[in-house]
Image (cartoon, rainbow, N blue to C red; front, side, top):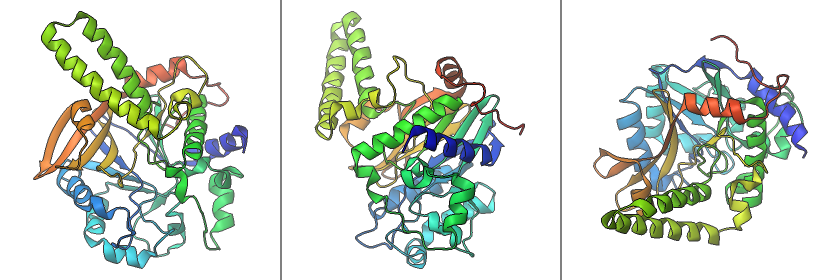
Length: 364
C-alpha cells in the first residue's frame, strides 16, 4: 500500500471527525486497547483489572476527567459481546457513570469495529475525534486505519457502507507483536500527521510514544543528558548519575534484544535530522507491569503509567517525574509531560505541511 493511498483516506477521516474545544479547565484521559474478554484465562485485561478499575473510579472519575476510550475496548475478535458484558459489570458501571455526566467518548478500533452493527449498544461510537486548542488540532483515533484493509478506500463513507451489512472478519490481532507491521503503521501516521500539521494520538500498536519518540530513543537522549550533567557534577552527584546511567543502559540493552536497532529507532519514521513531535500513543491496558494512558490537563499533555505494588520495574521507579498513590497499593507514575502550545509551535516550525494539505479546524 502506498503512502498516497493511506493519506487520502486519513485526510477524509480527520476532516469528517467531530470536534470539540480543548479548554485549559477541561481534563481528558485517553486509554486504548483494553481487550476486554470473558473474564477467563484468554482475557488479556484480567491481570490488570484492579489497577484499571481503581484508576478510573477513584482518580479519573473523582477528578472530573473526560474519558476517551480509543479503540479495541471490547475484544470482539475473540469473544461475543454478551459474554464480555457479563464478565465486566463493574467496569461497564464505571463507563456508565462517565457517560451519565457527559464525560465519555468512545472510538472504535479493529477489534471492536463490529459494535457499529449493535443496535442496542449503549454508547455513541466515533471513528475519530478532534480536540481544538487555538490553532492546535489534536486528532484522536485508534490507528488501524493505517493498515492495507482500511486505507484502500475512503475510510468513513465507503468502508462503513461496504461492511455494515456483513460480519466483520478482520484479522489484525498480531500487530502489537509484529515489529515490522507496528513500525510501518506508526511511520504512515507520523508522515500524515506531519504533513497536515496536527497532533495524532493513537493506540493499536500497544507501544507508548511521546512526541514521536519511542522508549528506545527517549532512553538514548536521557543518557546523553546525564553524561553532560556528569561532566560538571560534584562527587556525590556523580555517584547518583552513574547509577542512573547504568540502569538506563541496562533497559536499553533489554529493548535491543527484542528487535533490531534500526527497527526500534525513530529512523523508520523519517530521514529528517529533526523529528516532528506530532505522534503520541497511549500504549495499552494489558501490559505485564500495568497500564499506560495519555492525559490532557491544564494545557499540558502527559504520558502516565499505572501499576500495583510489586508489579513495577525499577526502571519506571527511577525514570518517573512524579509518583502518586491512588489507593492502597495502586500507584500512578508520570513518565513524560510537555506543554501543548510549545508542541504546537514546534510542529508549525518543523513540519512539511503544504497549505493545500494542512487541516484548518472549524470554529468551535
